Image (cartoon, rainbow, N blue to C red; front, side, top):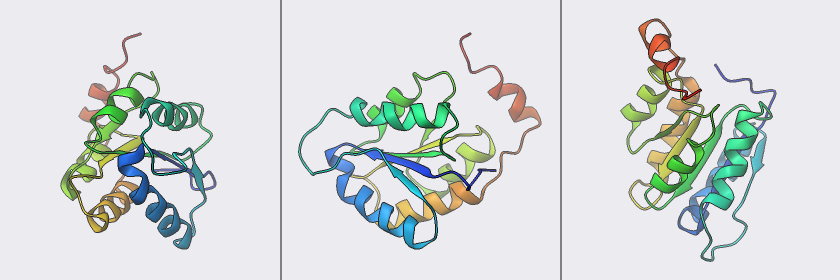
Length: 148
């Protein structure tokens, strides 16, 4: 499970900006500390500029886990997964949020802001937080992910 003495990292590009702002507020109201890695305004940006800082902070153990948002969530997910210590999963429905934690031990959830409602995004984050990694046969598979 996640270590909530540490903040939750969140980042987005312009397509995820409105959701990011709403999620930072929502998470803070729920009592979590949030490390907002940007974007800080709703204008066109390059998603890697915000995905890398979230992934870095997760990889270094500075935060409990990461949340990334962009239009399809593919760009931020691909970018985050370039980091050896990251297992970013693209989640577009609640069951996927559960499975990326349960089976893949994901430490970053990537949400497609153009394809899910804000309420579904919140539900997915709640499930992601509450779902433990199952281990067992899944641990064997997770151990085979890294290229080094």
